[in-house]
Length: 488
Image 1 (cartoon, rainbow, N blue to C red):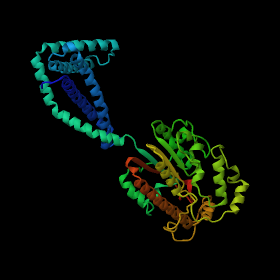
Image 2 (image 1 turned 30 degrees about the vertical axis):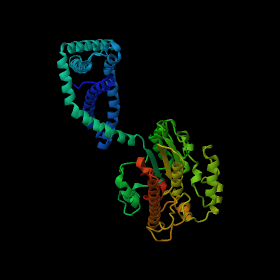
Image 3 (image 1 turned 45 degrees about the vertical axis):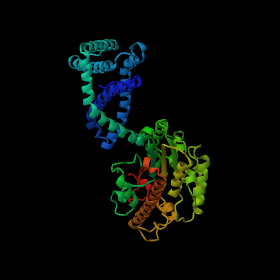
Image 4 (image 1 turned 90 degrees about the vertical axis):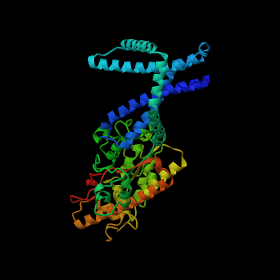
């Protein structure tokens, strides 16, 4: 054991000796525990996730080891700083302290194992544990004093020499853990849900038409879910399940109007309580967080009417009605609903529209505007895009991409007639599905543009992007449109 040239050198060197042994013992225990839990962890997590978890544990465990070493070293510090002991050779005292700690740990482990073998079901009180602890301390001190000072010094030197490779090994892993934990401490979450997007019409899942070329390419570096199912067949209950993680019969939002049962239990609120800035950009008023009753879980949630560009009189009226009354009344547009006479009058003024009134770019641009204009990290953003929901009127060059005929190209024909009626004509049904697929292709391109823009802002480094849908679409059983949709 090397000589100390001064009080400061002694303090630093002696603590380092205590910490080294503590660090190795704690690290060996953590490594053993890691091997113990790996079999269970790999059933639900990857090896990368496992390493990150162990990295975080190693940092916290090292801090505890350092504090424990400080408590063990404190008596030596007092001896070194109190004037009666300054002229005493204290290097042996540190050796005795380390040996005492080692003996105490060994005897303690032996006692614990003995108790587990002989009296496994006996519960010991706090008083008994304190008595055992004091007895172990006395026995360890007695054994330490029995050993000659030179023996103690040689034991400590051998231990310090033998653990040197382990100190370097665990130390390197600890150093590498710090940047990885700093990188993964938080991450932004962007949840993009396309309304009425069915997996069965996505080329990503093997569909015959090339409807999602970018999403298929993007998914090569993502996790693809093949067994996901919508909790219902229309927007209101399915988006409620997305936000709460609950089945429909639990959140009890069965119909198009109503609030979530248990609005205090939802994903955005959980994230907000963990320091996230929450954003809801919803294009379908049936999924509005205000009408759900969860708007308080979001920091920014513009009215759904802002994301609509009405091209018809009834669309303009609906937009302004929802903007004024949508979050205040359970049903804000009774006079505009199906079966009311004004709906029939408004239908007389309808003109053919050859482009969607709900362009996805409005939603995507708004998110980039919010993120770029504010220092908000981490953030959770839910983007609910109405396309490819009917009416299926994709703009050029997507309209006609999968069916060149001139049929079913406008809002008047698509939404005004076919969505509300049974289609018995096989040819019309196939054209209608082609228009839907063209709309998906349009959404694929808009999503590609969004990912490209986000990449340019350097936000994707710490961002998880989730692409999903609220429910699907069906063209079987002699019908077309969302009224028979069931898959996601």
